[in-house]
Length: 222
Image 1 (cartoon, rainbow, N blue to C red):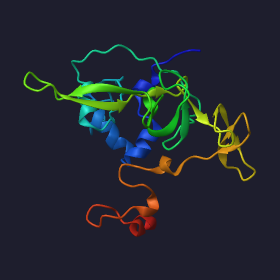
Image 2: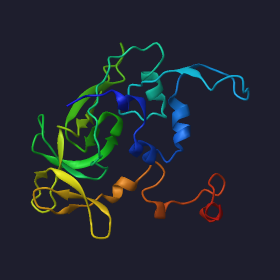
Image 3: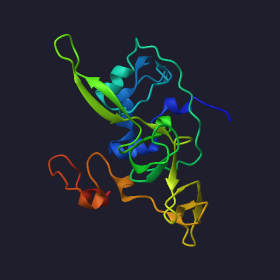
């Protein structure tokens, strides 16, 4: 199977959805433009010299830690990503770990990093790290979950047998696209948690900020 670095060039669809931010804003927050032609002059083509590839991690692209990890003077090895035709893992999914010390254990997906084909499973595949260490303080030991590859590290759990299973996308009689377990042909519904963003758990529960938000009533008039 061919491996590409393509996903290191763009932000995943699920990341944009989770951010609840305009995609253009996210792009501006992490892009590094070294030079561009001035706008508003028809004699100049819309050309620019900018960084094309970024090192995506568990830090979100619009945050300060992401910017520090992708500083202009920082050189990093290439990361090769296996392309996935249809993404099948979402926040809230129950999965089974297939590798490492927690192989065979099941847990819930709490974060999706689509740019690296990663998911983070609550309480599994953990490691210890020391935070705040200096010459006068030994630091604090913190346990955190390390990401797992969706291609080899985890599988979805069949709702009937409660065991790991491969899945495929199919269409129902009503035309809805669903995930189906290959072992039992049961539908694996997408969890409600997949619709969560930084700002709200669900659209219905979101409380509008009258000072900052465009009210839904006004947006519907457009």
